[in-house]
Length: 237
Length: 304
Image 1 (tube, rainbow over the protein chains, first blue to last red):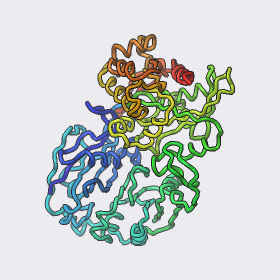
Image 2 (image 1 turned 180 degrees about the vertical axis):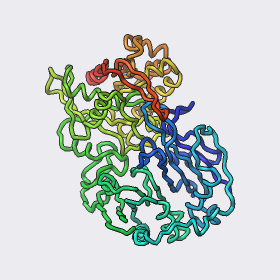
Image 3 (image 1 turned 45 degrees about the vertical axis):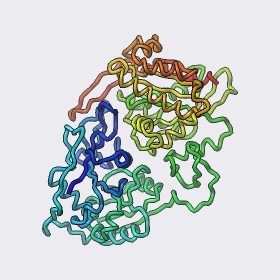
Image 4 (image 1 turned 60 degrees about the vertical axis):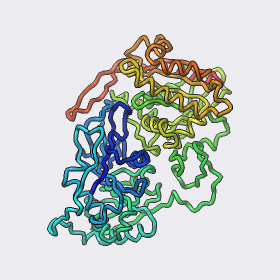
């Protein structure tokens, strides 16, 4: 299965300075590139300030395609203002290519990660090539499947709200991937393709994810979610 | 883990039928409970504050590439205006207007520059300032200027319409300050020159129509070379610097603008680069010594 690649970060290249698409494979046209720019986060957009923080994002782009992206902190930001650059590595594919991945973006993400894609490197290629993924996803063993029974009520309520067309924010979730796994299992393939989510980006009007996660439940976060009409579900142990 | 609570305040889809409020930036209607414009993502506090006043509002756009010094320039400018140390004085309207000033002054006091401005429009700081000349107290003008991100400006210039807020504000602007990094203008002038020309072309495109395409644009445009602390020749004769280092911009202005001027400005007296344990480079300002910040604004205001 062939997928296109792109990288978005802050750099000083021959064409641009600051946050921009620093590299894209030939199969990404200008319209898709513009969509990737819109959905990709810039300065200080990761909710967690820890240098090892990451976010997995899934969103639609033009031409009936979908994108799975991983956002991490990279090296020092080039403009000498003391911050780390935010780097987003993205794979772009047509939704129908996911038929042997159960239309599950997490299967795509895990397979790509195991094969070394979506990985930050200090030397970002100016023109990455399209990547090849196996026709079937590399499924986790039963022992590795997370135990999601204790998320059940959160998952059910989230599904209900998402099916009602609402945007949902799940706060106080330390392991968003586990909850996401459970949520996706309760969705049909069509619903999975229509869903957009982020596990670790700050909320922004520019990135209208239907599902967002946060490890905290601060008043500021709830206010931001409320501003954007996002239903907030706060969990506790 | 159990579900504890669900909270929802539908501030963006308020059932209020009041659509007489219009975003000052793009003109889209908004309801009383919304905080950001749905169309251009501009904060609606600005629109509400302006609507309460009964004075003419002037948009003055501050444009420039990423790293040109827009945030520092704007923050220090506001600080100087608020102190009223020169003939021109300004009073900020709304708490949002003080944010840029506060962030910049606080950062400089702690020997650092403010953080990079994010490209997301809802993160931009907006300024609404009541300006007047000391000797002509009746000359009140409401100045509105957002602190745009340089990357967003670059993207909008490349693909007009990418950032509706930029397009709307620049299109309504009655004056422009285009900031160019004098250090980049000295070390890699081609890049700075080409970007300034693209910016000027974009502005002219928004402000001219087919009937007036051959006429020069009369909009006051101040081209400000920032970071002049290390380049005395820029401060002493910015026009000559432009002619020699940014010849394309110089020629474009001469050909297409009828009301423009070059300026040199700086905020810090000197600075150095530190590298921390993560390899992050940080410019450290040694002391604050603002020069030439007010002159461009005073000039554009005197252009009527």
